[in-house]
Image 1 (cartoon, rainbow, N blue to C red):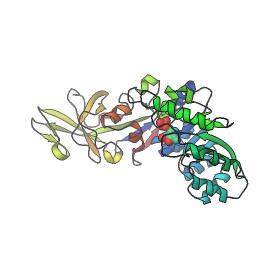
Image 2 (cartoon, protein in one colour):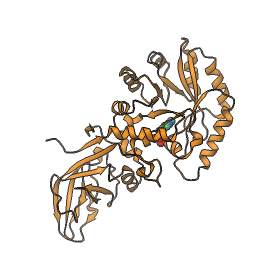
Image 3 (cartoon, rainbow, N blue to C red):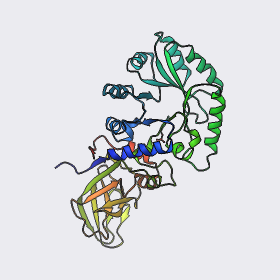
Length: 357
Ligand SMILES: Cc1ncc(COP(=O)(O)O)c(C=O)c1O
């Protein structure tokens, strides 16, 4: 038998979460964000489950080509755009859309003399200060695209910096900036990520770009995914592979950071930081053994972690463990480890078999 850790990927949860997006943004097309191997779920697998999406967004040209060759006919958008002029012929050949976010890309496009129909998403920096043209540069960038015979359809785009935070002042400011700068442009628009889809209907526009909510995790630190009607698409399951019976004063694992105050049983679980479990998850991070909630103990090792079996007398070698998913929302593990579900999901190691359910 192989090492007993695997990620169950629930395809119907992905479909369900897409329907939640559609319920929130019924008049918008949906560009499913499947970058980072679909947030760890597997790009092709997620794309198949999300086949009714109107488009897909990702980073790598190779992955985009694979998707097109697999028969997906929707818009496929490279959200960091292209990096050299040599990629443009491939974009055109495979009818891939690209974000344009800086002037070097405009220059490469100008150098690409072939008249054609490259669809582009022109990105405006409305305050995130990561990618995009400034409001001052925007109209000349748009003119450059309009006069370029290689360019087909232009869609206007921005990205929110703080849509997951309470208050909404930054979203309002970014939206106002976007509306002011793009006023009078009769072009499609896209602004909203998951948090904006769920909280700011004014931002929905022609396309929404959900990522994390499709995978059943919450974009908000203060709202559980289940409260948003989302279903977790990944369950990381393992088993107990050894049991330790500790005496009072015995310590556990690297650094001996946990000490037993009384005799207790500890389970050793196949799953560690080389599998993608956060090494800095503290003692107390929730985990499920034999369907009972308990906590991790000691330091997470490369391939194993320790769990408290107090009160779970039935647990022994071979007992099932849910590391996250279902009763243990990935958001809870993330919060305990002082990170976000995005990072946990994306960090799931390639060595973990993904099994579709
Ligand atoms: C440009 C862009 N749009 C949309 C998304 C999806 O965001 P989320 O996963 O928060 O829905 C991302 C993800 O980081 C992104 O970079």
